[in-house]
Image (cartoon, rainbow, N blue to C red; front, side, top):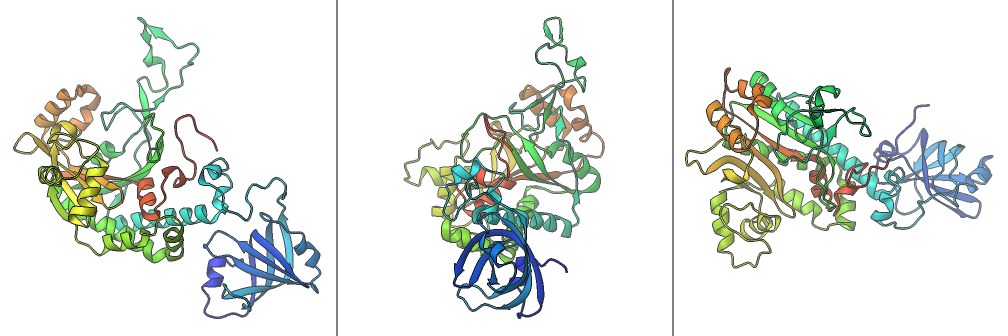
Length: 461
């Protein structure tokens, strides 16, 4: 008999017929000559009730079940006589697949703190919270892929090992096969030519530069993969390993990129609202009561457009007592971004044309030679959710920007070549996947969004 998922069973139009369900015991209780077992297989937030009668040969086995046991049940799907569930399974056969010692099994019928659950990340997906996170994360990833695939974008897998620092920040993990207890030296320095790749290499912080290669051949591409940053930051918003979504579009300026970003966010949020109503309802009830309303507000709004200069003027005339100073030339902080979206504008905002001194070398310089064609998409609750720019397609200006940043053009000869052989205007943005899922769910700590968080002094599981 084919195994039926709990989600499929609960979505049926009517009861009746034999079913085979398999999952993990959430709870079990007895009432006279009947044993009631709540099981979950992770396909949905809801549990399925299995009813085992005393007349069944497996009744004693059912009575011995404890939280965490895995079981296989054959039976008849019937209308439930109890409250809180649509259907239940009247068991005809029960098999225990795996026992769970009730003395040592750490998940019991009570609320566990998120901090405690991080210590048992191999078991936390069995809880309501982390099962819901996993399903929303999956739905979000699927929505991202469908958005780009439906628009004819090509999915490009960019390298995780690179010799280029796309952000120029220097916070990169070194990749080496050299013996750290006996590092080879040459003229007093590390003999990097003896390393595996013959040069210094690192885990990537972005797939953008490599994605530009394919955008300038295939027009519309995107990357979606893991990136790494060796930033010693132990906050609720930072991870050392995280996933990034980075589209690159040829023959596109900043206005076109802003339109793409708006359509993209609306599609992703709309799709998750449709695919995960129960899970989002759970987060709305237990973690952030504005979760659903915030997503619906973004889906149904038109994004405002402001320049950085206009944003600074709004902040300086706001009368607000901000923690961080507001001056032209300084980057906007989360408190500034949230004031603009939540109090001043009341909907998402695309801020463009930032000072070139606070932005990356690859962003296109405006005619004023003071600002670049950069954009940040700001949303309520968190501020920036997308950062992007029109790329500098003029080789001479790009080269000058690289020199100003102290970069060696020999390391980026291929990136300069793209501006020498058939260059075109092009643009792209980056979206942090975990921060997006954190925003969707209303969870407060990004370590509870990724299955296995990598943070300073922590690489468990």
